[in-house]
Image 1 (cartoon, helix red, strand yellow):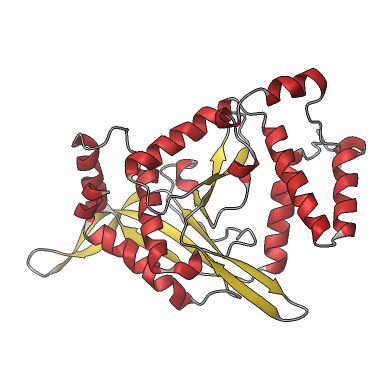
Image 2: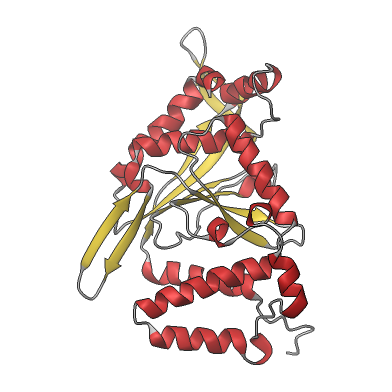
Length: 304
């Protein structure tokens, strides 16, 4: 067979390919796909948007990030980094109070880039919205190859410090030679780009590892019924959460008379995967119970 086109990986695909390959090679993934009835939550969400309490237009994705942040407080082992040496069978889990969401974002050119949303553990809905708007603003001023290359070089330096000389050598060959060479800015173009204040562009701090990854697949493929069954946990994180599209479906409910009946409800599928070296299913229960409580008692979002 003769290919009609050959595409060599740019730095974005190199980073994604390397991290996902490491994930599936090293991490024993486990976890459930759960469904939440968000019919009442959606009604309360619309009331909140119309209430005038918020200065920003609120997205449902932002609302769910707040819910997830609250849920993680009930399951702290999900919001952690793992260090594990398989040969020595030694490991340690670093738990965090701060919640730094790693969130894949689709860029104008169709590529995906994972951004670190810092310190979402106690932010209000308005503060979360402001943060997301600011990230979108800074992305427009960012040369993504430069930003990702900065992260790649930082990872390379850390690998050197850990004595991974073979890894570093192979990375340099792959990034700096032949058809696969990463083309970064140089000369005048580089100087002009660096004149942009870091507060106005994405830097390595915005791309570095968060404490947990959340991916909203439903925002990319709206209205399709289904679930996310597989999503990689990016080391050293120990959990990943995927939201799929909320859809209206028939469901069994209990009416005011205490009788079961079928009704049309809005159902949100959520996939919660964890690194089985670091967690057990029981470590997820606090998180899942909190999300359920928010769905069952949605009036609480008025105080967020």
